[in-house]
Length: 177
Image (cartoon, rainbow, N blue to C red; front, side, top):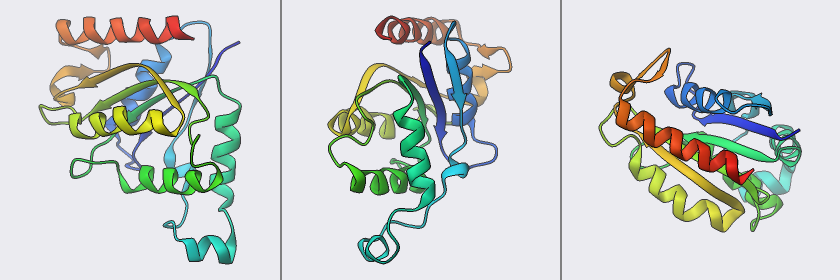
């Protein structure tokens, strides 16, 4: 059975990106879903000196092991000042020390982003679309949801055009599995 790991790239306890990643992953049928919270993989701020003194944090090893058992990923990026959150960037920095060319282990990825603003995390989304494939992510579908609070409810995406676009990207991801 296909195993999919889903997470929001944020440590906020009320993360809309975690909600969005989990929503998207739960729309995929006949797969095993593993829904995680980045708070379960906290690590000290990356430093070469710290790596030399203490080695890799256990949380990074656990994340890497978890990632290795997956077939695909659903990641929803939060945007902090137009870029990755510090927690997500730190995770990538530590993971790159294990294998800088394949942080994401060539996993199939549905890349998402959302924000309360009208651009839906578009800046970080564009950065990731360019950068993540260089680090072993096989992005087969992507979607950015603008104005989360206006376009998302407990039922899902409320705007019909955005819903249609999301569903097309979701189908593209599913077909790539």
